[in-house]
Amino acid sequence: MNTETLASSTTESLADTGRPSCQLYVDQKDKPGTLRDSVDQSLARYFGQLDGLEVRDIYNMVLSEVEAPLMEQTLRFTRNNQTRAAEILGLNRGTLRKKLKQYGLL
Image 1 (tube, helix red, strand yellow):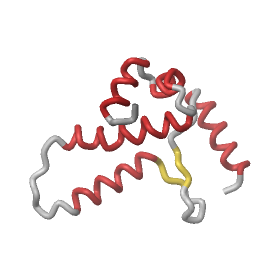
Image 2: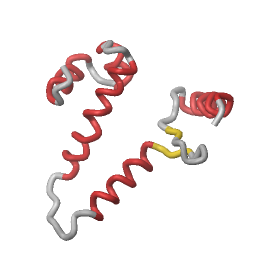
Image 3: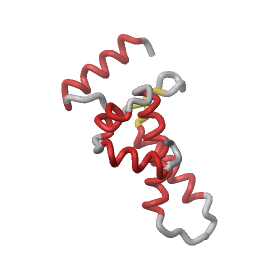
Image 4: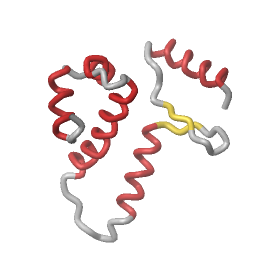
C-alpha cells in the first residue's frame, strides 16, 4: 500500500464522519482488515478452543482485554499526555486515570 492510497482512504473517511475510520492495514498483500474483523476472529478462536467448558462474564472479560491495550496505545500515541488521551478516548481525564490505575498503567 502506498501513502497515496492511505491518505485517500483517510480523507474519504474524514469527509464522511469527521474522524478517521478504525481501518487497519495488514501486510497480507495490502488486504485491509478492520478492528472489528480482528475482534471477531479472536472471539471465534476463543469460543473454538473452549471444548465444552462453561463461559461466564465474557462481556467484562472482553472489555478488560480490549480496554487495557486501548489505553496503552492511546497513551503511546499521545506521548503520555493524559489530557489528550482522554480527549481521543472520549473520557473524562479522571476516568482515564482511574482506568490506568485499574490496569496498572499509571
